[in-house]
Image 1 (cartoon, rainbow, N blue to C red):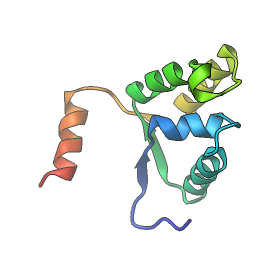
Image 2: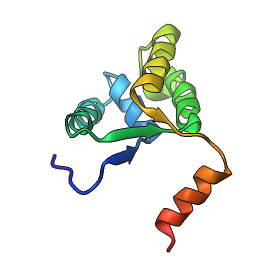
Image 3: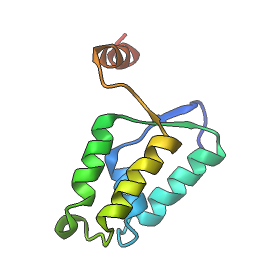
Image 4: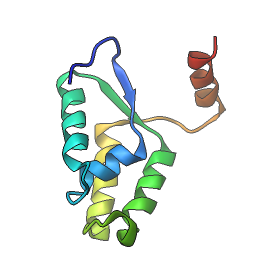
Length: 103
């Protein structure tokens, strides 16, 4: 997958769920996507909301089919916080985002 023209990517919760859930049918695609982003030196961003959603979804075993233990889920969140830039969740961030998409 060739990515050009951008240096930053905001990650959705689903990418994190699929990348850490080895039984997901999208596990390989998610892990390959993250690897491609790293190799292209693209900065990856998440928000506190994405991390909260990850915790909620990853702990719903009957929905995700994941066999992750609570300790592993928490370790994943800790890893995400060090590997990705965690954006502040405030009005300035929202205003900046809106300005990028609405001229």
